[in-house]
Length: 266
Image (cartoon, rainbow, N blue to C red; front, side):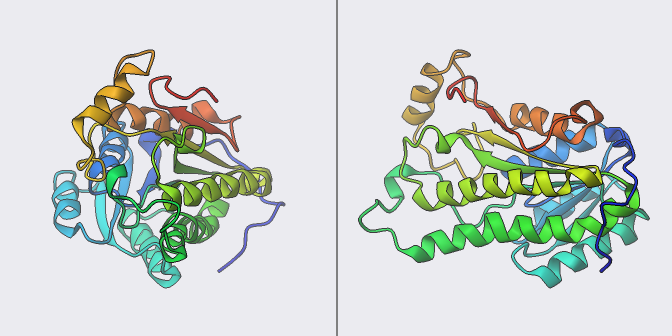
């Protein structure tokens, strides 16, 4: 792999309709909403999946020539490298934007999560491998294509639980906090190459596969605590991701935008 250098010439980020976008975990839940949002704007999308082949293929088949489903475990560097090769073979050009959304085996039900006195480190390790190792693999695999394009966009999916840890999602929150650190350090390192790295952090979304186990009373309590009196939807969250992928955010990097209806003030 050829490493990008600080001598490369940065070019303007292409409009969304001209982009090739990778969405990890892009077949279900929030990932599906992200995929559909980019497709709606005219982008071509690589729908990465691990356990949702049927959903990924169905979504790709509805957008022939503009979407391709590729199975890969983002924790496995060889599979990620192969994913990027397949993406470029399918579309004839490198990926412009990477959205790190994949989530490793997690259900958003606070009553079912291990508390502080009982959670094992293995739980943390599993979430770190999905959030941090997965993002590291996809970003590094994207860099040669970014270098050829002269620009690149990375959007990492985070959580508002850093600021508002109201449920004991210890492992998930710690991993996303580490991903925020990676977001900011990579933004500083890759900025001279014309690459921006940002994070969009939501709260509980109504409703994704991961939040399907959440009791209705929890959704009601969250809505009551927001200025908008509502729980953010995946489509609303996706709007902010589109901003960070677009030329409109050309001077924004290393940022964490909280999209939760105003519940958390950061």
